[in-house]
Length: 203
Image (cartoon, rainbow, N blue to C red; front, top):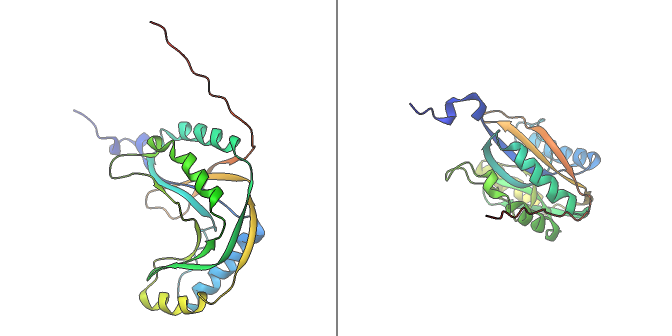
């Protein structure tokens, strides 16, 4: 009798994200905006959510995690730190408001590199990795129509500017159904060239 993986504890599924996090002072500044938004528009304050720029979302078993980390380490090592500029607010009509990322080029290039290991992130045809090519920092999501309409009138006319250096990417995960993510590993940008050794088999 064949046992389905979902019934084996070692095959427990996790929701993963690969992210870039602002420095602590900027996180505090953004969290203050989120708290103000929550108070003004009757939303719960999610204290367990830290501001970030999500690069990739995927669902996967824990088993290939080591291989994913090894590949992410190689990608991070070859990249240099870069500046990220945040500018004003944007929205996904009817449900979300976010801080715009004004400098996208380096982030999009990084996402493209990470996409090269998408096979490791794909659980099955129903759980494919989602790569973010229009980066942003969420202020509020899953808004009701009245919340969105009223809030967007305010935030579409609100100025915000900030800049920070991206020095690393972070892999985080949570069990399905849980709210809080845990940090798996941080991968620092070292701007070093990596060489791939190829083994040639002779018959």
